[in-house]
Length: 215
Image (cartoon, rainbow, N blue to C red; front, side):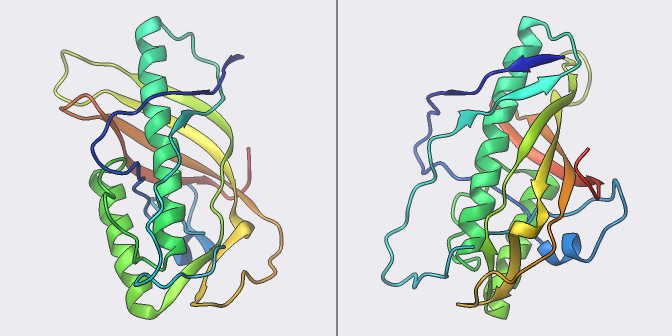
């Protein structure tokens, strides 16, 4: 099994580094069928008063360590690294947007597109309208590169499929100012499809529940 080592990189953008994440955490917590599309989850920080708080930029994205059974070419390795920057940015955006109760929802399109962006924005609106936020933190571990599709002559975008585990019991949607409730430990395996855009950036375009356990 080949491994990739994480490293800090420079990400050029005129706006804050943010990540688009689709939360709809209730869908995940209620139990979706394996491989069914879901919106990504939310995070345990108490909600802040947006009228007085100073917006915090998301951390500079890095390339997370990963494993793969694929024999990656140099071009595929470059694609994987670009996709993983978007992946980490997307996770950071999930935590930022949903820990704020959907209020800190600017620049969600930087790391998300298509179904992921739509789900993120819809979930943010629902959180704000219902007076709820994500308590806890959405995390990831055991990142694996499942597939890389580079098709310059095909009528579809290049894509990277990432599988990873997440501690599903480390976060929950609760009423504003309520703490993270005690939950039975549980982990999930998620699948993210990350596609290359026309401007050569990478964005998470879809996420699915791969398994109801870490595998």
